[in-house]
Image (cartoon, rainbow, N blue to C red; front, side, top):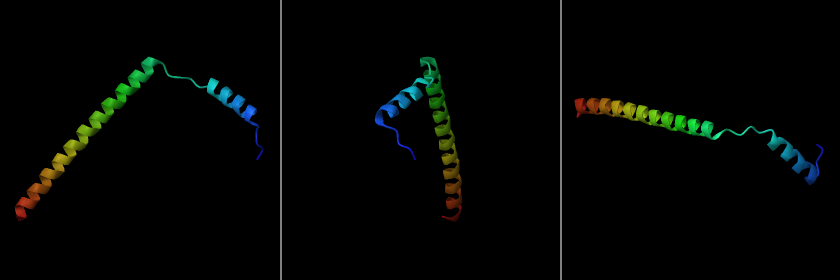
Length: 65
């Protein structure tokens, strides 16, 4: 494997970084809001599932206890 010298490496890195398309402020804001909404919905879903399982388990245990 051929090694490049540090100067060539820095030039290649700068070349690759110049190709990056950075998101706009609006895109970042919308993506952040969507992540927060999905995280909230997921937390609510798992809280409901937890309550249902806990209620079912308590009723089963009360039948035998």
